[in-house]
Length: 450
Image (cartoon, rainbow, N blue to C red; front, side, top):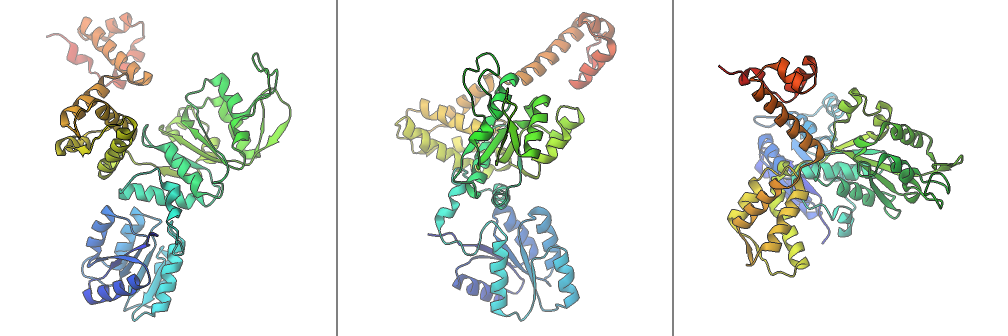
């Protein structure tokens, strides 16, 4: 069955709410009703409609105040205001502030329906959609979270154009899934989607991977090699962990984006390219710019539209959905008959911190499925899997931070908090040693012996 557009109706007149709801459901819309602006805001914390229709004069918060709240929370959500006290200046002022429509009561049904249809065409859910397959673009993203739905709404809106998109999110949140979803929702969906992790390829090879090389360009280049820009022609190129790209390559990438042409390593010829760029990072690129590690001009080329993907801890209502999805997936993979999680096991999953996000949850569920000997995942299995995760190797950066802190603690203990002696042991000057202590928030006075 085709999905129906959802409309939230807000009015303190129960009779009008019921009448409007009946009219809208009769023409194929799904409605929810809120008898006050405060109730409407609570509803928006749980679910996301495609449109809000609100009365202007209500006890407590009025319609314009509700609009202001909605506009701050969800800028892409259209709002239509109905009022019995409307004037032309009021309508003009409301529209200038961002209200999609402003109708005076008693309103004409045809006019209202026309405004609703027009408003839905400006959202990610067109009123003329009739095929449920329209949702295939986001089929890999499993969610019932309102914050995730906001991100998906923006993703579908940006997919309609060719603007470069920069995805922000912690490791494991699913940035590549989002990039693929944007590609599938775009006009380039029938062309290639090519992904590359800029942090996973050595600097000396990354240029060749992106732009290609000609035969004889360097030792081992025995044939011409097409780069990823050429392989993604007419489609989408996803540059994951763009914040880790070396500065020299940032210059060449900027030139390629500006001129829409590339030059293979070892070649003097330029090749025109037509590629949509989606990039992603877990780093704060503005901070990287401030430290000189990322080019500001490239940043503005990539960050035409920014999308922030929420962490798993910000969408805990999705944990049962995802956990059961992974459970079914791995039960089939390992040919096991497992029906679900015990209530205690699911509670542990929902309340866990999840620093590794969805990727970590998937790994935990797989471990539980592999080791389970009964039809229900027990809390003991979940606990053991989580403990095992915590003892696994961390990233090089994290390991270096832990080593530095442990080393500083050791030398401060040896010298009883004497910074001069500790700096001498560490072969660092006092100023540099103080900076290290500040970085790790260590107070040398704590180590002084009484």
